[in-house]
Length: 350
Length: 235
Image (cartoon, rainbow over all chains, first blue to last red; front, side, top):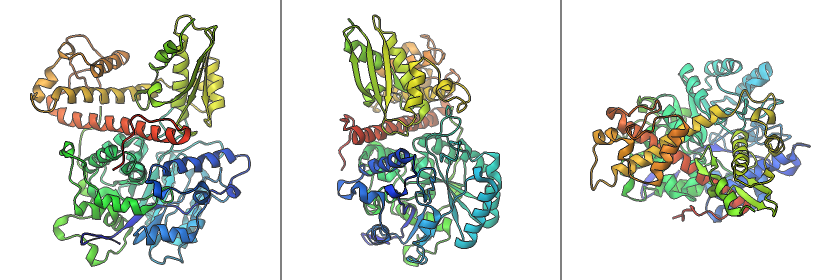
């Protein structure tokens, strides 16, 4: 919990990692990809405040003690969600797979949620793995990384035929939260890999699932906003938006927040630090202190205390069924966190 | 002998299709050398080794074409550096081949559909800036009815107006003096009832292009120590 000026903020960090990108974990022959990947992440970290930058060796691999201190102690999290990233083509034991993340479960009982994943290109075996993971961990969500390489394949889309049984299985098992992460390089290479249209179609096909688009579809924030405004079950994951823009580009950040509050709405935005790319502490403190820099932003919705409470934790708590202590809840007249009816219908862009 | 300045001018006409900014402004031109004999060697560098291969290819290929059009130029070499598909892209661009030749079996056509998609986004953003300029700061208020009734002939001389019309021409959208000053995707005028939402959309697309450009600059600064003139001072 974070407390400021008498207000108590229940914090759910929806996007954290416990990764191992040390050279010992690089796949032989793919070292340049593994190295390029973690160095790219490390470059992103430099967009945060200088005092929070880590040396590359520490950034490649950090301990459970580091995670506890950075996320739960200094990072105010009441609950943290780990999003797995496998990337086994490049990292021998995975970048941060479910097994690795689950090492932290016993350490933070009731406060740490592990999300699963599936890759429809692996067919039956992936289905059995999803069922087994659910059996073992009681999954409430999965993280899908559509740009991941798999053998000769350089990516997939949520609309692929092979993916449909997995969504039906998620509905059946009550794995309600589908986090989608777009990335570069997807087959065919001449298409826009960041296109979020497949999320739009999947959200319509599976109305009982929640689709959380990580880093708000960046670099396609406009396509994401046009979609989210029309789909009641599409949510915005704020990871990267806060980390990469709030400190380094405050005016862009103000514009992005204003646009998200207008198109997506405060009931459907969720904080995620993307730890360990960025530490959560400065992001949470910064979000609570934040306001538009001047009155040229007057036609955007306001960033109220209620909006901050929803975005920092209450929206995610509703999606994940996390119980919020009375003292951190909203008053009846302050709205319903995670409410689907925030979506408004507008014409689609030309 | 041709001057390096003329080659750089030619490179300044090449845009990152995803960001709608010249590659020279973005810092993507790492070096540009002109020999006594007029041979040109250009090295391009991108913010990350994983930047999308399709856009990377378009920039490398467009850069080569732009430099080849400079009169008196000799051999032209354009090389993309430190990219995970640099070998494929450099080989195809050097041979004057298309994207399909760079990645046989991995693409379903050429890149012109992708290019047009982003040109249309860019047009919306450029027109949005023109509209914001015409609506001004409110000191001489212009009604929405008056704004959608303006024609190309009514537009002031301004770089942003020229850029908007250039792109309309490229996309084959009408831009005669009597054509609407602002056009919808089909080239027709924007219905006045839709203008408010059109302005919102245009602003959002503009913001998206600009903030993506900002992110690219930030990463390029970290990777290559490139000075970033657009950098904001963090508060």
